[in-house]
Length: 228
Image (cartoon, rainbow, N blue to C red):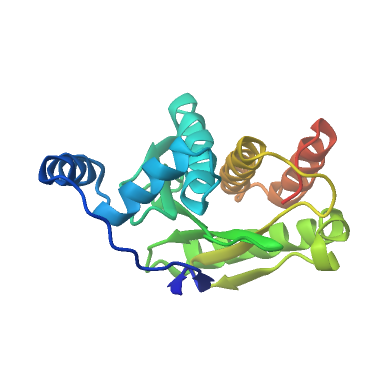
């Protein structure tokens, strides 16, 4: 058993006799892709036999997120910390333009929870951190009221800390969306969160921030979205 992302993944050790030339070719490709020999062989064999693996599921979901980043000038893709993570940066239009980081981690073995989104901002500015905390608390309250009844367990699982927001991504309680649909749903969620966060800070000084966010959030829901 191997532990990834807090989950146990069943794996076994096997011995294979391979030509030296095959191993050299595999190692070259693994190095180019930043992967290990075992992980690459596992993926190649799984694709050959049309098997759905956690790695393939994660890659399909991340492909949708990368397409979203390519379309949106506001986002910048960062180097992947691991095969199970993808990070996106976005600039917050507030005084010295601090950077917001969205880190999506997918669990290799997804149950009701398929992963989590971590939103963070590095800053020592008390006013900025306080405003960010107010937004996250507003966001959590909106989700708890509008989305939680449709999620497994009837609640949104999130944690708010100084300059940080963590949200568990849940599989929809009804229906069986494909991996591509889940990828588009996560991409849409990140896009919506980033858009409303910037809208909040744009109206921070005129007293309209809360009302604007409530209205914009309701508009997103009316347009329809996969609830995760």
